[in-house]
Length: 372
Image: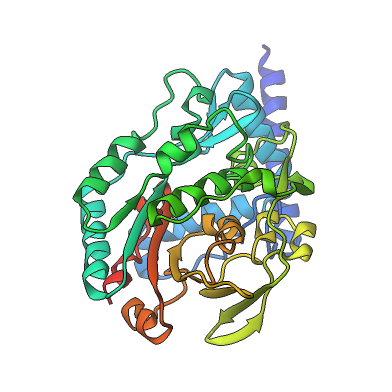
């Protein structure tokens, strides 16, 4: 390669970078990144403390990356380049078999988990009603056969067994319920949640642990509400070549009253929110998405009143549980600081269930609220 051609390539590259930077600066900041389903980094604050800690440069880099012109194209191009180079992972997400994206699950901090189990046991001792505890294994555990060969991920079953052995709460065997159906579509291929079918098997695991009659899927009619669902793993991985998922429902919403609470104020809700099928985060179709508290009541039911302390997996689980519970109080510790003990007493709760996906329980920093 001649010196002149090298200079030409250098000038061309610098001109390209310069033009990209100028155009990105001139364009208005983005309010939301729809394909990635998140808010972009805000402009960094220039302070002595931020400069000294390196936080300013980190936030500046994230800000430029989030607002660069053509970001969606560059994210997808990076994923394609990773795939073409032979790599089977991008941004902590594996390119699995059968057109499946699977989150890598890192080995959790066992000391943190032991402390969190202490909060579960404190709750068990604080209330006068039965407390059940369940951990939902991720697709990385149940669909391990879809992972690339040698892909590292946590041994979720071993950790779950360890935590179940140590707790005073009654446990829910969700691992067995899901692993028995690992050949079925129990998780979304482009999202980290379980599907409605997976939630059905999870619901029966809950009912079995409580000594209640199981549900029979043959008594329900499956309805596909959308076949254009691209979930969180689609958003984070940059992968744009997979076919979208579909979202199915089984349980009708007749005779169901849903009340959502935001900032303590009640609002009429719904088991299924049709408008959410028109947005990127279509999983919010179930109950309308994240909320501090949601109370679901089944008309004419004499089943127990259940407090479910949960993460977003229970949004698609709730329809099945309405078949056996008269009231289902969905309580999200991320947004709800209410004393669990007081809530149980004030709402005549019969049973408490603490139910989390394994990755969320491992990383949640609000579990201390269980002991209040």
